Length: 455
Image 1 (cartoon, rainbow, N blue to C red):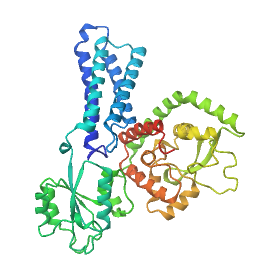
Image 2: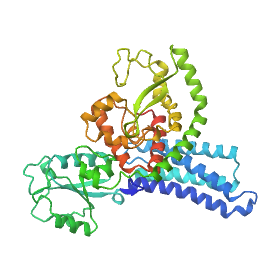
Image 3: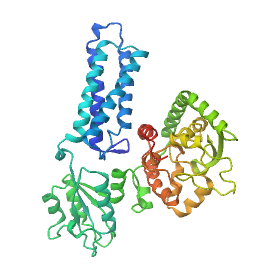
């Protein structure tokens, strides 16, 4: 994993994105090199065309799952997606040709780039020699935390080789399989050297009383071996801060959780620009949606509801009405559930496509919300969840968002348990949020909407 602007990226994903963008930049350089044959085309003209093409290709590949760290696609399915990606990229190129005709040199170069991507999509996904991307991990500990780490590693990253568990002197009972426990006849430093370990995850039930060999762990780190604690492991591997492995001290003294006026100003300007563009682009969809809602059932096409925002302040969120007007006729707030019978026919469609969220863009312009952030909850649920879930109020240190890291990483939540799971992603966002992470979330949101996930 590599950390960029506070966000962790898998090395394989980073290499794929870098290769794709290098191809597109190479196209631009190629076109600029031969620009003498088309003197009427300016450098800024070509740069704009290539920028649009690069953004389109990045979005297409993200939506089709080519940058996913874990997948279970067959070679045939990858072939099909690669062909679809090439066809969609061709549509983007045709769009560029219509609105701003590129030179023949640039158009030919773009075709070569798309063919190269078609080939590399298949090669990088299925044919890369596995030893080039393998990472050997040793877990220090054999208790319940170690078991959780081992399970998450095997589930989250197929390129990880779990070499085994090294028992602490203070752990008498093993929660992990006895077959995975390494012999302690040799020191930790010797075992790490013999097994060519790349990373050590310290996952102990109890850290006091000499349970950690600090000198040996330091020696391993000085030899280039990564040594991380369990909280950092989950942060970089799963993009979450797990409630069962974090403490108030880790949150206070660790990196991140930096706000500042400059970061807030950049985020606000970004919200205003993007929300304005999205409102203009989605206005026809919003008009049609409003008409369909009014035609199907009596009542207003919009509904407002009190939510809790930044620093616990209340505000009214505005959404398209997707339920009957008597959805909460008993006056008791209820979470929406899968197959909820209160949802109308139009409501099912607009919730699936997230169209019901579009009026929130006006709330973003008003300043109560951001494009990206934790999902705003109702005061009734906030009071309940703050009592039941530790650190729940931390998510209120940033503005709530129309979309968010938790929304693209976890399915729709309808219980206290779901809220606790989503909070772990919200804590990651609050700790590491930046304009770069917001862009990552927005790209992934497009994929979630188009693939119909988590509605």
